[in-house]
Image 1: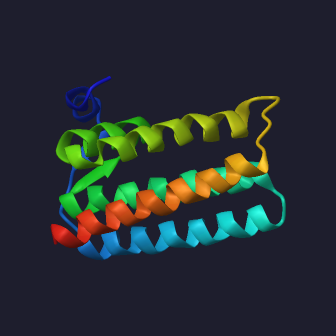
Image 2: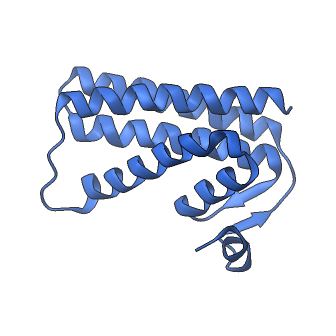
Length: 140
């Protein structure tokens, strides 16, 4: 799949730009990051990783709302950001790797996540959110 196909298939749609929703998405992202840290403290490692990905997902959506794009696909979010914001390409790679891990954690029968992996997911989510916030603030 490519970005053009995402739009053609309706997985991404042009809409009005909405900074209020973009900012709300960043608040939601930071809320999930806090929840991810709490589940790590409680030793619920799979949910800590799922929360870290969810934090990144909402941060990524903030750029789309700021740009006037609505999404219906986790994959297309990454394609959009990578295409429109090449400086975030490495962050999109991280987003996609945690998207796949989240999918496994939710749907695979046996997934083992250790504390180091959960801590790394949180660090990556913090970096991701910071990078997204910088772009949203810079282009607003």
